[in-house]
Image 1 (cartoon, rainbow, N blue to C red):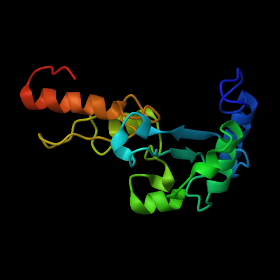
Image 2: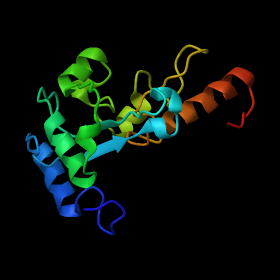
Image 3: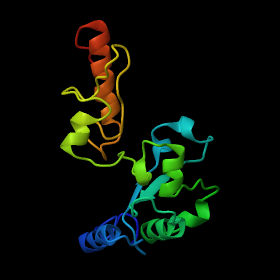
Image 4: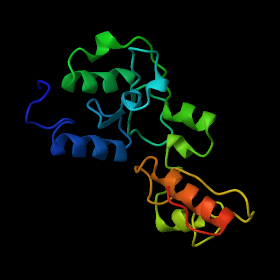
Length: 174
């Protein structure tokens, strides 16, 4: 689809549903649902002048060792023709690689595993304030903290507000 068209930017609902259902069955989809970000558009310090970075991932079965680079790039190329010819370098992690690097990412899950109410309040210490820790100083900051996995950045925002309020005893506007 040409840029600026009126159609979907990530495939049809049926394609996304089929991809996610396949992952649920332990399959690695040929046309994965891909999440893409280009942070250097908003933070120029992430790339050399005149260049950009892109970050992408797709859902795969728990603990996967399959390199999805080719499939992910094919999906991006499908909606942004010419993408591949602009790639200067890649840094690739499978789910198993991600868990090895960051043990909180159980099975390669960036949300740290279950994204349910028990995980939300249970975390490393049972608390109705999910950012609290038994120690007074530090705050807990995990990608699965409120408002939940997939709302990138907001868990840090709310954890920072909680930490400042606990440290200074008053509400701090951020």
